Image (cartoon, rainbow, N blue to C red; front, side):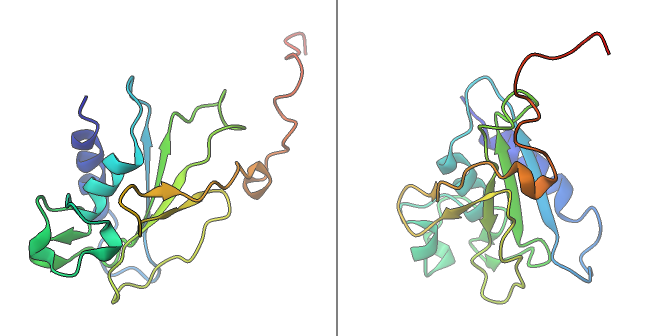
Length: 156
C-alpha cells in the first residue's frame, strides 16, 4: 500500500498556499484515513526524504535516496513551513483515543513552533521515528473529556 504519494501531494499543495513571507511559521495539518494505516516511517520518508539513517543523523543531503518535503539532495527547503501535524485514523469516534503526531523540520535556520499541546511530538533520532506517547488532550482543544460518554440523547 502506498500512503506516501497522497501525503506528498497534500503537503506540496499546502506548503505555499499562504505565501512564504508569513509573520509566523506555518504549521501544515494532514489527515490520513486510508484503509491501510499510515505509519510513522511513511511520514518520515515524505518529510525528510528516504535514507538508511535516522532523519536526525543525516549529515549530507546527498545521502538521501529520495527527496522529502523539507530536505532534498540539494539541502533544506520550506523553512517558512517548519511543522506538520499528521492525524492518522482520526474522526469524531476516535478523538478520545487518537493523538495527531507533531513533526518538526531539522533545518537549523528555520524558526519552528516549539510544541502543540494536543499533538504528540515525534522523535526522529532513531531508525524508526516514533511519537513520544502523548495522550489525546481534548482539554487543550476546549473539549470536555466526557463529551462522548454515555448514550446520545436524540430526543432533545
